[in-house]
Length: 159
Image 1 (cartoon, rainbow, N blue to C red):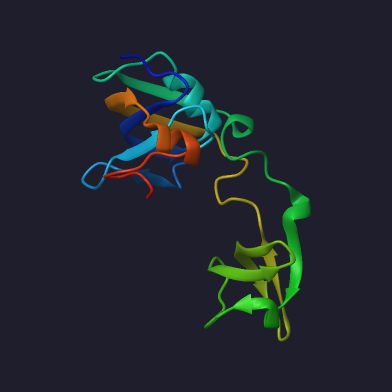
Image 2 (cartoon, rainbow, N blue to C red):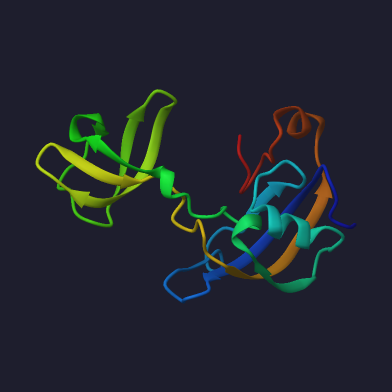
Protein backbone atom coordinates (compact mmCIF):
# COMPACT_ATOMS: atom_id res chain seq x y z
CA UNK A 1 0.00 0.00 0.00
CA UNK A 2 1.39 3.39 -1.01
CA UNK A 3 1.45 6.54 1.07
CA UNK A 4 -1.24 8.98 -0.02
CA UNK A 5 -3.71 11.36 1.58
CA UNK A 6 -5.78 9.80 4.41
CA UNK A 7 -3.37 6.90 5.04
CA UNK A 8 -1.93 6.33 8.51
CA UNK A 9 1.84 6.11 8.18
CA UNK A 10 4.38 4.82 10.70
CA UNK A 11 8.01 5.93 10.29
CA UNK A 12 11.33 5.99 12.06
CA UNK A 13 13.41 9.08 11.35
CA UNK A 14 16.66 10.86 12.05
CA UNK A 15 16.86 14.58 11.41
CA UNK A 16 19.75 17.00 11.61
CA UNK A 17 20.21 20.61 10.63
CA UNK A 18 22.68 21.81 8.03
CA UNK A 19 25.25 23.10 10.50
CA UNK A 20 25.20 20.06 12.79
CA UNK A 21 23.95 21.87 15.90
CA UNK A 22 20.73 19.87 16.10
CA UNK A 23 19.99 16.17 15.78
CA UNK A 24 16.98 14.08 16.77
CA UNK A 25 15.90 10.50 16.14
CA UNK A 26 12.93 8.26 16.82
CA UNK A 27 15.13 5.17 16.70
CA UNK A 28 15.34 3.45 20.05
CA UNK A 29 12.01 5.04 21.01
CA UNK A 30 8.51 5.06 19.63
CA UNK A 31 8.12 5.50 15.87
CA UNK A 32 6.10 8.43 14.55
CA UNK A 33 2.51 7.64 13.51
CA UNK A 34 0.67 10.31 11.54
CA UNK A 35 -2.25 10.85 9.15
CA UNK A 36 -0.79 11.74 5.74
CA UNK A 37 -2.03 14.87 4.03
CA UNK A 38 -3.24 16.61 7.18
CA UNK A 39 -0.22 18.77 8.00
CA UNK A 40 0.96 16.63 10.92
CA UNK A 41 4.62 16.60 9.84
CA UNK A 42 7.03 18.97 8.09
CA UNK A 43 5.52 19.79 4.65
CA UNK A 44 8.67 18.91 2.68
CA UNK A 45 8.95 15.53 4.38
CA UNK A 46 5.27 14.81 3.81
CA UNK A 47 5.73 15.59 0.10
CA UNK A 48 8.83 13.35 -0.11
CA UNK A 49 6.96 10.41 1.48
CA UNK A 50 4.09 10.54 -1.03
CA UNK A 51 4.02 7.29 -3.03
CA UNK A 52 6.42 5.41 -0.72
CA UNK A 53 5.44 2.14 0.96
CA UNK A 54 6.40 0.01 3.97
CA UNK A 55 10.07 -0.96 3.81
CA UNK A 56 11.15 2.07 1.78
CA UNK A 57 14.06 4.13 3.05
CA UNK A 58 14.84 7.64 1.93
CA UNK A 59 17.15 10.56 2.60
CA UNK A 60 15.80 14.00 1.87
CA UNK A 61 17.03 17.58 2.19
CA UNK A 62 14.35 20.07 3.24
CA UNK A 63 14.72 23.82 2.62
CA UNK A 64 13.46 26.18 5.36
CA UNK A 65 10.33 27.14 3.41
CA UNK A 66 9.35 23.43 3.25
CA UNK A 67 10.36 22.83 6.86
CA UNK A 68 9.71 25.17 9.77
CA UNK A 69 9.71 28.31 7.65
CA UNK A 70 12.18 31.13 7.32
CA UNK A 71 13.43 32.89 10.44
CA UNK A 72 11.18 35.92 10.99
CA UNK A 73 13.00 38.83 12.67
CA UNK A 74 9.56 40.21 13.61
CA UNK A 75 9.03 37.19 15.86
CA UNK A 76 11.70 38.51 18.26
CA UNK A 77 10.04 40.60 20.95
CA UNK A 78 10.69 42.21 24.32
CA UNK A 79 8.17 40.85 26.84
CA UNK A 80 7.57 41.73 30.51
CA UNK A 81 8.75 38.86 32.71
CA UNK A 82 5.34 38.85 34.44
CA UNK A 83 3.84 37.36 31.23
CA UNK A 84 6.03 34.25 31.43
CA UNK A 85 4.56 30.99 32.70
CA UNK A 86 6.59 29.71 35.69
CA UNK A 87 9.85 31.13 34.32
CA UNK A 88 12.21 29.89 37.05
CA UNK A 89 15.79 31.05 36.60
CA UNK A 90 16.01 32.82 33.25
CA UNK A 91 19.09 32.14 31.13
CA UNK A 92 19.89 32.77 27.47
CA UNK A 93 18.82 29.79 25.35
CA UNK A 94 16.17 28.58 27.80
CA UNK A 95 12.72 27.73 26.38
CA UNK A 96 9.89 29.43 28.25
CA UNK A 97 6.11 29.57 28.05
CA UNK A 98 4.39 32.90 27.50
CA UNK A 99 0.80 34.03 28.01
CA UNK A 100 -0.29 35.82 24.82
CA UNK A 101 -3.59 37.08 23.43
CA UNK A 102 -3.64 33.87 21.34
CA UNK A 103 -3.01 31.59 24.33
CA UNK A 104 0.19 29.93 25.54
CA UNK A 105 3.24 30.01 23.24
CA UNK A 106 6.77 28.79 23.56
CA UNK A 107 9.78 31.02 22.99
CA UNK A 108 13.55 31.00 23.42
CA UNK A 109 15.24 33.52 25.74
CA UNK A 110 17.70 35.77 23.91
CA UNK A 111 18.41 38.40 26.60
CA UNK A 112 17.39 38.79 30.23
CA UNK A 113 16.74 42.19 31.81
CA UNK A 114 15.49 43.21 35.23
CA UNK A 115 11.79 43.48 34.25
CA UNK A 116 11.76 42.32 30.62
CA UNK A 117 13.13 39.50 28.55
CA UNK A 118 13.89 39.40 24.81
CA UNK A 119 12.27 36.30 23.30
CA UNK A 120 12.43 34.55 19.93
CA UNK A 121 9.02 33.11 19.03
CA UNK A 122 10.34 31.43 15.86
CA UNK A 123 10.44 27.63 15.86
CA UNK A 124 13.99 26.60 16.92
CA UNK A 125 14.52 25.07 13.46
CA UNK A 126 13.11 28.03 11.50
CA UNK A 127 15.51 29.17 8.79
CA UNK A 128 17.45 25.91 8.88
CA UNK A 129 18.02 23.40 6.11
CA UNK A 130 17.14 19.94 7.42
CA UNK A 131 18.35 16.47 6.47
CA UNK A 132 15.97 13.55 7.14
CA UNK A 133 16.76 9.84 6.96
CA UNK A 134 13.45 7.96 7.09
CA UNK A 135 12.33 4.33 7.12
CA UNK A 136 8.67 3.65 6.36
CA UNK A 137 7.50 0.95 8.77
CA UNK A 138 3.78 0.71 7.96
CA UNK A 139 1.04 2.22 5.81
CA UNK A 140 -2.66 1.54 6.45
CA UNK A 141 -6.08 3.00 5.74
CA UNK A 142 -7.29 5.52 8.31
CA UNK A 143 -10.41 4.69 10.28
CA UNK A 144 -13.49 6.91 9.89
CA UNK A 145 -12.83 8.25 13.40
CA UNK A 146 -9.22 9.16 12.52
CA UNK A 147 -10.41 10.95 9.39
CA UNK A 148 -13.06 12.84 11.36
CA UNK A 149 -10.49 13.91 13.98
CA UNK A 150 -7.75 14.66 11.43
CA UNK A 151 -5.06 12.61 13.16
CA UNK A 152 -3.93 9.01 13.77
CA UNK A 153 -5.17 7.08 16.83
CA UNK A 154 -3.78 4.06 18.63
CA UNK A 155 -0.24 3.16 19.64
CA UNK A 156 2.01 6.07 18.77
CA UNK A 157 -0.96 8.14 17.52
CA UNK A 158 -3.15 10.60 19.40
CA UNK A 159 -6.28 9.55 21.26
